[in-house]
Length: 61
Image 1 (cartoon, rainbow, N blue to C red):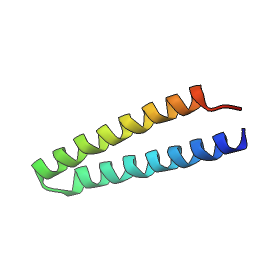
Image 2: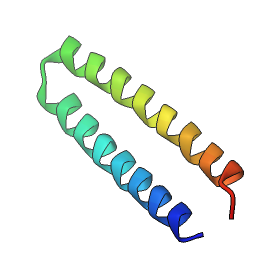
Image 3: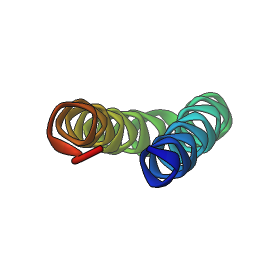
Image 4: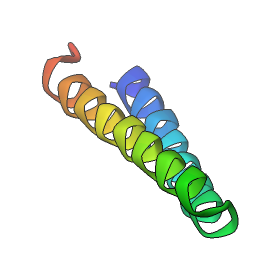
């Protein structure tokens, strides 16, 4: 159970860092570069949410 909490904590922290960096770069980069970074950041966040879902569901106690 302890390993599961550590893995989930690391994934949530990583998700938060990516979200903050994506928003920062979206507003500071030129138009098309900002949109590209926002799309890629959203894709990474979506992947991390799927990983968190499956870790929560399938991690053995």
